[in-house]
Image 1 (cartoon, protein in one colour):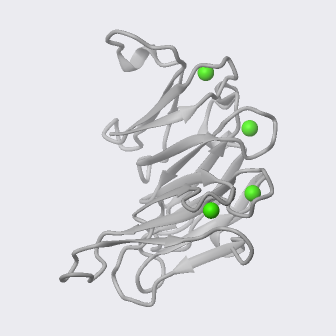
Image 2: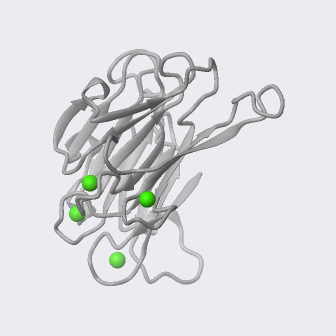
Amino acid sequence: MVVSAAGDLDGDGFEDIVLSEPGSGTAGRVHLFFGPLSGALPLTAADASWTGSASGAVLAVAGARDTDGDGLHDLVLGAEASTLCGTGCGTTWLLLGPTTAVTSLSNADAILLGSTGSAFGSGVALGDVDGDGVADVAVGAQSSGVGGAIHLFVGPLSGTINSTAADGRIFTPFALDDLGASLSLGDVDGDGTDDVVGGAPRFNGGAINSGGAFLLMGGEGL
Ligand SMILES: [Ca+2]
Ligand SMILES: [Ca+2]
Ligand SMILES: [Ca+2]
Ligand SMILES: [Ca+2]
């Protein structure tokens, strides 16, 4: 299970919570709870739930940023094992707030598709990497190329988008690093533009497969 602070998806000023339940059936489920929350709550009490792709459960979730400038935070979900676009391609969905308007992931506001065998959606994050004030979507594909990759899509996004149409791509020349197995966007150097931190759990740093994290500063060129 992956839990993420989703930001404020319904605009009521309270932070909301989203969590993935990959072991639910073969497709997994994602559940959204609007804040404020207290006490013990069953998953059936969720304010919205989505069933993932039957070919690969949703494992990665992120939110808390606005990709279309309407003031409401949006949500991005990744299913690296999805075969919607080919064996092991992976799929990522963008749901714009208020997300309760999206009843099925097939009706997501944007659907991003990986390439065969790339595990696109192994990590997902929202942040503004080009500094235009609108959040962008970063998607890790840990099996892309020789050692994994991170794809950047400049927001706003809509419709179906292939990973080959990404606005930026970060990759490693080292084989089997699994770059993009996790990732995060945030303004590390305080210049107002979000930077990319990509996890590579099998990077041969201090020892074989000891892992590493790579920081790339956002801004021009990304
Ligand atoms: Ca809220
Ligand atoms: Ca929004
Ligand atoms: Ca942007
Ligand atoms: Ca920065």
